[in-house]
Image (cartoon, rainbow, N blue to C red):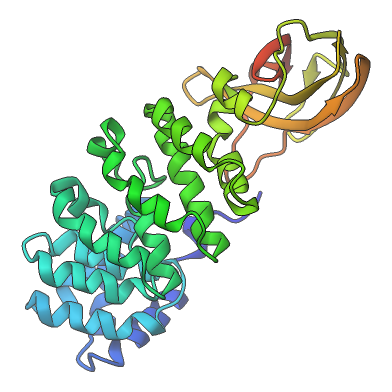
Length: 358
């Protein structure tokens, strides 16, 4: 199994480098005490984000008591801090700076030129979005690519690993001008953030996301790629309007036949081979996906969609063979039990079969 993220960062070696970077601008940094605080009896059981938050609280006990003095040190250290440990710097602002907005938002800008503040900006946005959006607007026009990405990524309604933003889940329109500014950004990372932001919006406000995507699609190659990635959730669910944007055909008369699994029992670590025939009564643009229903820790099933292909096919029968590996990864642990696999054509389930994972 691949090494877990939480074991790759916040090690004694990486924390020593972190301490060295901060000590450049705070010679009084007490590294032995810092290590004692960080690597306490609770540390081993913490997950990655828990270790970050814990380390930030330990840092608070080492830096000057004055918040303004502490964040000035962190601003100076930011260019020299590498790795996931660097997230402790903006996290310091998020945890201890909500009573000093002007200084904190300035610190997130200065730190954000080197270390992303996408998670740290969110408590401020949650508390008073009207006060934060002017900062995001300025960052969206900054020459620094990290700040431009922060403007989009930090205001996503559903940013992974971070607190959600209920106000923007309910109504994302206040941040749409940011996405308009960034849709033609020269950085692929920024444009990918815009796409992920729109995908977030599509989960709570599909009509708003589709209105934006419909306007953008066809204006440039860059925006077409944004729209395609932004609509991935809607496409997987077979949303008719999303399918129409990309010219996918109505799947009503499309059928799957001779769906066959190589076995009905598979061991964890092995592969499942499967095949099927796609029957098309007329030519059409087709998006083929397969869905695995995984057994989760509490015995419930959780579906994961995998893309097979998309293409324009002539009328007739088209045969497909694929395989899927059930090897454990850092992002997925397989559990024994009854699983299923389904074939989706343009978002509609057309065939389904069960198998046992042992």
